Structures are given as structure tokens and as C-alpha cells.
Length: 214
Figure (cartoon, rainbow, N blue to C red):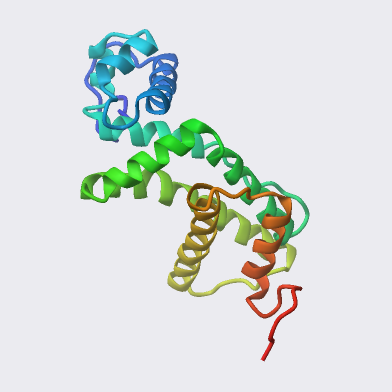
């Protein structure tokens, strides 16, 4: 059975891939992004930092775009949906985790670099969607299924509508946390996560804050 490269293509026959080499290369890519930025990052430097031959790197990733997206995606694969006993508490927990990842220099540098570059590169944008956005929608699906088992949300009968709701929830959560931490440069602390979750679940006119509730 052939191995699969990070790009999803069948690998060439030969020695089995080294998971340790993959880990070292992705970590070196994130370090280089923090130090050098997107424009100065090159695969030769990454290979040297990782302690591998350039041919080892090129067998796995054909170019910088693929490498950097995979390096960033690996960070977000650390996200887990905590079981804290209620839907609201679960959301607060994953929001805090997401914000904590975005506070790391390698996550900030990597995500902002690939998003900026993707404005000029449709293939890169598609890769970001496949390996970061679509992959992390698992958290929304898992959270909704858990809430349904608890009786906090009704069961869904229309699979297409359920998928649209998952997309919308993901966009709301990811967009808010990214804007808060990377654009506004404000902390997504416990109070902010609690207030955001209240708005997400209850709507604008049931936030527990003073205001016109017409």
C-alpha cells in the first residue's frame, strides 16, 4: 500500500516516511515564518533548520504554499472540544483554546501569512479551506451532536440544512476569535468568551447587558 504525502497524492515507492522528519520540518517551517516572514522563507532554509536533506523535504511538499499551510494546519489540529457539562461551557472552552493557539507567534505569523497570500492564489485558498477550515468544522459537528444527546438541541432531520448551520456557526466562532485576537489585538479572555457565547446562543437582545430591547 502506497504512503500518502501531505498533499494527498500517492507517494513514490521507497523507504517509509519518517514521522519524526515530518514533525521536524513543520516545526522548522513555523520557526522560519516567525523569524523571516513569508517573503524570505525558502525550503532550503527550512530543510537546514529541520536537519534533513532538501530532497527529503521536496519529496513531501512540492512548494512553499503547501508546506506552510500544512505547518499551520498542524497547530489547529491540537483543538479539542472539552466536555464541560453544557453546550455553553463547551463553546467557552473551545473558544479559549482557539484564542490561546492564536496568541502563539508561530500561529499568528503563519495564519496571517497564508491568508494574505491566498488573496492572490486560488489554489492556496482552496488548500486552506480543505486543511484548516473544513477540518476544524469537526468541532462544531461534535458539539452539536453532544448537545443533542444532552437534550439541549433538537435532533436534525434535514442533513443539508444541518450542514449549512455547521458552516454558519463555524464562520461566526472562527471569525469572531480571529478578529478579536489578530485584528483588534485584544484578549479573548474568560469574560469575553462568556459574553460571546451568550450572544451566539441567545442572540443580540438577550445578552444580559443594558440596552434597547425593542
